[in-house]
Image (cartoon, rainbow over all chains, first blue to last red; front, side, top):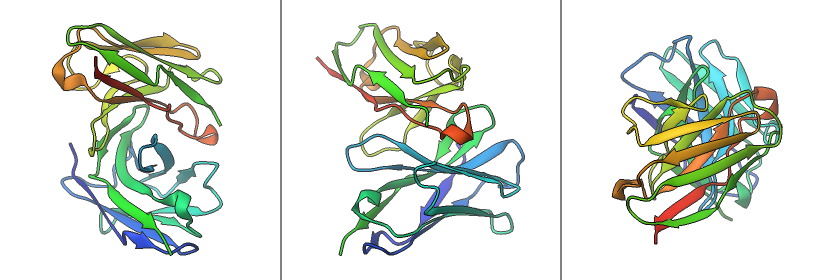
Length: 119
Length: 109
């Protein structure tokens, strides 16, 4: 298991921008065989894939979130980040950062960061 | 988007039972399907990739099968540690999104 640690504000107001960063330790983020991803889970609900990014910076997004989401990668600091604009109550969830080997599922997960949206 | 429909949503079983969970895709996903186990308050744990490839360290009582649009996770003899929620995920194509099923909660009968 590769340690992944997400950090960022846990409380946002509606219309604000969510910014989370995932720090990868114990291994390099600059590996060509993996995607780095964000997945979220609203309370009591199923998992929702937000997007993947490769080490080269090519990002792929959930079509339903594409207009509001951006994922970036910082190979120097071994981090990748999520930015979600114009949040509403429906964006409240536990946000996970993960690693996924090409052609396989998400094998390594951070502990999850809860995000609340409230005025 | 490719929709993933899991059934049943809840399964009440006893230790030692054989458990079967089904996941149906709205179109063919060429076997690009993963299964996860999630316990309350924890991150999911990857059990199976590519329909039937068991991840390292996953007990052999777990197995996956299927093709086309219908896939199955089987637990041959349920153990106490297996009470959890199970999710399937297709990862066929980024353009369709990498979608999860709605989950199956395996609970004690």
